[in-house]
Length: 124
Ligand SMILES: [Zn+2]
Ligand SMILES: [Zn+2]
Image: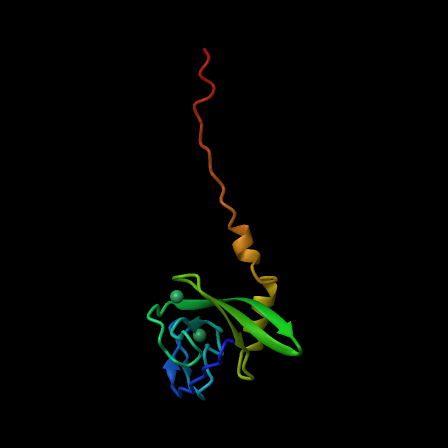
């Protein structure tokens, strides 16, 4: 059903997060240094998304021996899995591991209605 529309867009970019220069090989969709990505694609490589927000690496998943990073857009919350690349910084990958399984963050986002009644002891 889901047709895979991959367009190879070869493009160099400077990471807006950590500032390193990345030589794109056409598949590069995240910074190998800090692993942050950008929300620029609707289908991989098409650069059709007009969000442009920074996508934070929020989790790692290993499936069939393949490691993917889950990126979540800091602006709109859009999530996408991206395959890691051999250039990715192992230290940064490890840091994502420490974040725990997918979704741990959003689960923690439980809303806490902070009730500040305060005005209790008014008996004199
Ligand atoms: Zn970076
Ligand atoms: Zn976005």
